Length: 218
Image (cartoon, rainbow, N blue to C red; front, side, top):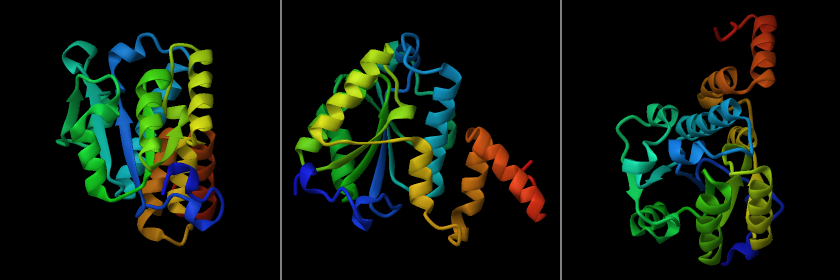
């Protein structure tokens, strides 16, 4: 099955904790110094919120950097979510050309790949386009990725969508994985993520919990 043959509608088109894998690419200082497509504080918060989402739902997560001895370590907020986890430090600009990354994806057996990266037009676009060609379904988290300009980011997203990628935002990923508030094993974790990274949604949830008498999440 190629990427274009995956269902775009219906239940099977949705992400679940059992069918997806997260790949976080090059969220490093070097890329961040010339990232101008998004407001910096919001972008960092979104990326960390996405990482925490994967952790709460036990979604396998691959962390990777490019030449970190020059480009800097992976964002501390992400490392704090996955303490002690191996971070694959590559020399390849295209993540999908590193056999270690591809092997981990293949070993997972999962075909829905959630990807985010700095920069969108390079670090995210190249592996997305290649993975799509190799039969994976790729969901690109556009508000946890960023480019050197708004145009660079937007053209990259357009290019990936034309290739078959599915654009999505980090809070949509979180909601799609939760799907039902009756799944109480993850509701507390989801609430904590929203309190810390959900902006107005987190504030509204705190207010709702106050009105229901179940605490404010403070």
